[in-house]
Structure formats: structure tokens, C-alpha cells
Length: 78
Image 1 (cartoon, helix red, strand yellow):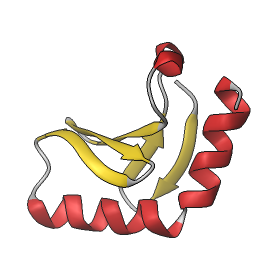
Image 2 (tube, one colour):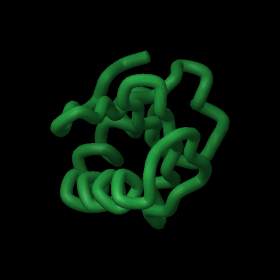
Image 3 (tube, helix red, strand yellow):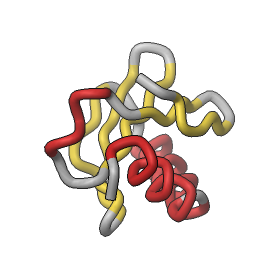
Image 4 (cartoon, helix red, strand yellow):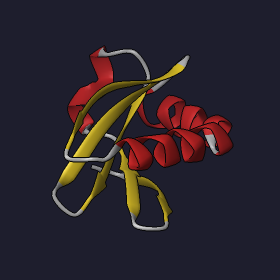
């Protein structure tokens, strides 16, 4: 599970087994976890995050979108 980004209390990462899925990122904070598709950016699922957290995470993903896509392509191949 490589960590791609840390922003505030959030950790953004991939699972090694994610290769067969569309590009996405997992986010965790404490016991909460979410999964966001990256193209386009949208929430796929969430467990425990508030709406405010989800909005903030979405904003962080948008701000770092090109870095996250590049990290995906570097890790899994284009």
C-alpha cells in the first residue's frame, strides 16, 4: 500500500491489487476510509467520513489531481 500523499489528517494510497480497476485513490483517517475515482473525480464509497470531510477530501484530490494520476500510472503502468 504505497502512500501517495498526506494532507492534514488524511492519507491517500493505493492497494497493490487495484491494478484491474479504473484509476482511483483510497483515503483514510483514523478508522474512516473512502475510495474516490480519479477520472472524473467522484466518491465511489465512504465509511465513517462526514459530508464535510468528503468535501474537503474531494478538494484535496482536485488540487493534487495530476500528481495522483501520475502516481497511479507510474505504479500500475499507463
